[in-house]
Image (cartoon, rainbow, N blue to C red; front, side, top):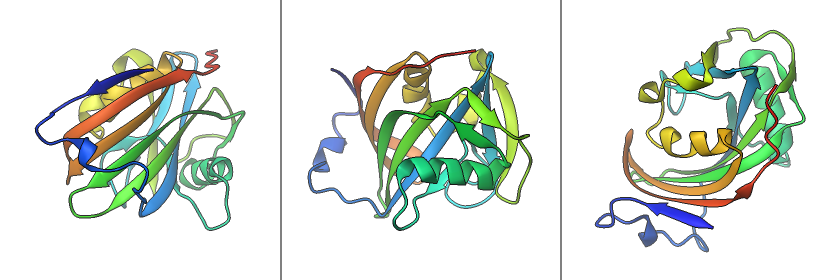
Length: 178
């Protein structure tokens, strides 16, 4: 396991992962087709206006896998298949909000990506992902996921600004590109 940490003066270590409880649990699904990644411009909710992957909050009694599929269907009218759990991110915001996000990858889906009230689908070349339009943490872990690494990250945000993070590489996954 390797660890990357930033900003030791404002440490994420002040948050105990054993007692930390998220306000919400959510998922993101990254769909790759050849050398492109299907992302969205989020229209509402947390991160509105930012580029992200389709996903959303876990419903009561739902598994994270079912949530990942359901949210992708709702946001883009596509159904991801054979999703692989690649990592998780724990976000704490200084206003008290917190969210635990499970990240999935697939290169298999059915349907045509379609704009909805929640999201506009956009295909990006893997080497041209617009990190400057995304949450600040994405540039830290998304390249790891696309390189076949599993990860667990903890992030402290003040609004849209990343204050501190800790990122552990926890293994590898069976990322298969087409």
